[in-house]
Image (tube, rainbow, N blue to C red; front, side, top):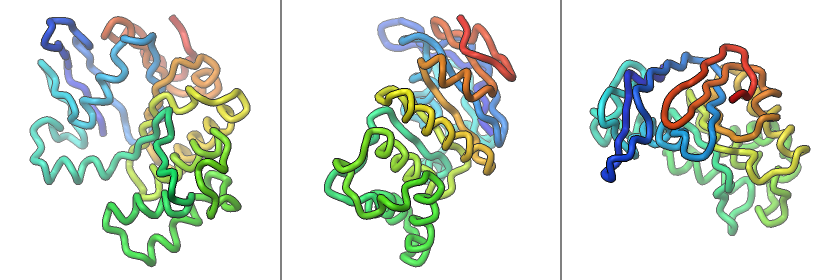
Length: 226
């Protein structure tokens, strides 16, 4: 599904962000990408979204080179990827229901789908009783679960969770990780970036470790390790 083929990225100052990365991620995998700040995790994600192009090598999604897609093809490709960020990025003046419905409207989904699917994803993240609350009325963990619901409501093939527990306490972190595992069990590929050792260890799935822009470990059933 995703393949980084001998990819390097050098920025204009001549500093390499990643070097000779070859990495494949298969449909249905749960992959944690770990590494210290500056290890190259963000650059990998930016190239997957075509926000950055590789200096050498290719990034492929379903056997197509991402940086060679037309704008229309790129829009279609991005719709197959849901994203969750550390800072939630919810719309403060919209309710939980409206935040999720807005993502569906932006993708051109009809009203009948919105009416059916929004309650379903809120049940999936255990927030059906918060449907008409505003983000400021929710805890940080609840806001992140809304963000996850919004990311998966259009049924993407891949969910990217970029440091999703960075602002959460241990209890909410545990709940978010359990939801990510549940989503993966339903067949969605999950790509998680994190600094949190406990998160990686609790997932117990494949762990790819980056250091100074290179893959230094790739364990099929691993733990956080340097």
